[in-house]
Amino acid sequence: MKIAIGADHRGQDAARSLARAMEAMGHEVVLRDECDPAAGAKACDYPDRAYQVANAVANGQADKGVLLCGSGIGMCIAANKVPGVRAALVHDEFTAQMAKSHNDANVLCLSADMLGQRLIERMVEAWMTAEFEGGRHARRVAKIQAIERGQDPSSISSESVTA
Image 1 (cartoon, rainbow, N blue to C red):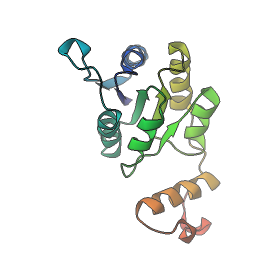
Image 2 (image 1 turned 90 degrees about the vertical axis):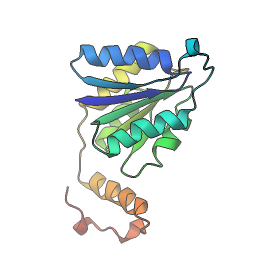
Image 3 (image 1 turned 90 degrees about the horizontal axis):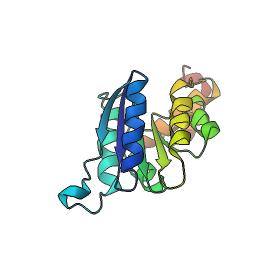
């Protein structure tokens, strides 16, 4: 699986460690963490990395994306502005698994400041191995897609959604 990973300056170390772990598991990783303090950059703006990763997922250049910043909040807000992206901010293995099984999240957002590296890896693994359940959840994802198109989500019925 091809995974795009992005980070700002606060998530850079965690992203690099995660990239190594994902590569060791056999995944192809594209790392977007161009913030290089050695080159004089003191900070990387999270919207830049969020856009790069979310756009790669939305355009099919990556199967999934992972974003890390201090809290994960900014990355999640920015990534969800890209049509076709369902980014989820998660805090543990359960919310990571639910992000996929109920919401079909294709981008995972994590806090580099509040989570340890091993927990980050376990959360990403839980999300990547979870399966979207479909059913009533497919209808809800279709409603999210309707909002992206500027439509009223209440116009989506169970009959109009194929799971």
